[in-house]
Length: 187
Image (cartoon, rainbow, N blue to C red; front, side, top):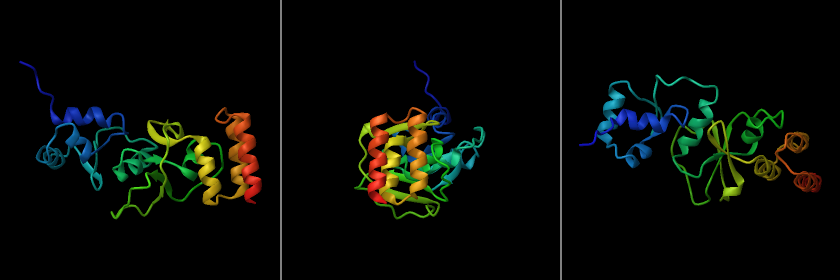
C-alpha cells in the first residue's frame, strides 16, 4: 500500500522552483482539486498573490519575487521576462524600467486586471531565444536587445547593452557587430 502525498507537499515541491508561488492550473495538473486548494487558502497555508496565483507565506521572501509573480500572472507556459526588464536583470544596461516587460505567444490575449505594472508583448519565441535567470524564464540577452531595438529603447542604453553583453560573454563578436549595425541603421 503506497502513501499518498498531501496536497500542500505536492504544491510546495512546485512552488520551491518558483519563488514560493504556484498557480491554480499547476495544482489542477498535479491532481489537486479546487476544494483542496481552497482549504489550503482558508487555513493560511497558501495566500492569494494574484488571480489564480498563490504563495506559501512561510516560503522565504526573495528580492525577485515580483518578477517570478509577473511570469506566473500570465498563466501561460511560454511567458518570459523580456525587453527592458531582461536587459535590467542581466545587468548589461543601466536601464531602470518602470514596468515589468513580459513576452507571450502571439495567439494570447489578456483581459484580466492586476496587470497595470506589466507590459505584455506578443511574439512567438523559439527555444533558442529563451533562457533562465534566477529560476525565472527570461529571454536571452541577444533576444532582449533585438526586442529593445524594435521597442524604441534609447540608443545610448542599447549601445551599453551591446558592449556589456559582449564583454560579459552573452554575445559573440559577430552578434555584437550585427546589433551595432542594426542600432546605427535605426538612428
